[in-house]
Image (cartoon, rainbow, N blue to C red):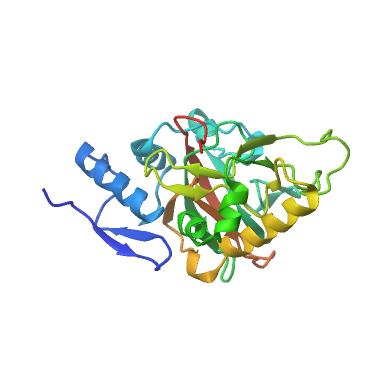
Length: 286
C-alpha cells in the first residue's frame, strides 16, 4: 500500500521534510509506521503546520512513543493549558517583568543532546516554532552515525568499551577542570561513548561539545585531546544540516544519533518555540 505522504530530503547529511500529511489530525497505524521508518532513516523530520495547538502537538508526539514530562518552574511552561503543562517547555527569550518566560533564552548554544545528563535520556524531541527572529536562531543537527563511521581506527579503539561523563550544569561546573569534587553539579551521568541505537541497531557517537566533560579511564589531558578531535569531526559541514525556522515549523529529531546546536540571534527580537519530548524505552547501551 503506497504511503500517503512524500519525503523530501533536506540535506545530504540528514533531515527530510514530510509533505502532504496533516499532522494536526489523528493518524492511522499504517501511516505512523511509515513515519517511524522515515524518522529512523533521516534522523530529523520537518512538518509544517501553522497554528498548531498544544493538544495537536501532544497527540502527534504520542505517535512516536510515550511523551515525557519535564518538570520546570511554572514560568517555563505554557500558561493556557494547565493539564498539559508538564509535557511542554517554552524555549524563549521573551521576558515579563524582566524575567524570561521560557528556558534557554539567549544566544548561541554548542552542539548537545537533550537530557544526556540523565540516566534515561529522551529518545526524541519535537520543537514547534511560534515566533522566530528575522535572522539567526537557526538549529543545526549533526549525523552521529556518519561521524562515528568517519573516526580513525585509533579513535574507535580508544572509545571501545569506554563511558563518557556528561553534565547539564555547564555554567556552574567547568566542563573539563571542574570546581571541587563535583559538589556543584546538578545533573551528572555517564553513558557509553558509542551507543547502539535501539531502533536502527547502528552505532553512533554519544558525546557532544556542550555537555560531555570527560572520557572515563583516560588521563585528563588525553581525554581533552580525544574529545576535541572527535568534536571537530562530528561538526564537519558534511555531517550537518542547518534549519532556518519559519513560524509553523515542527521538527522531530532523534536525540540519540544526532546532536543539535543553535546559532546566535539579535537579543532585541522575539523567539518563542514549544517543546515536548519522547521517552526512551531503556538506557543507552553500547
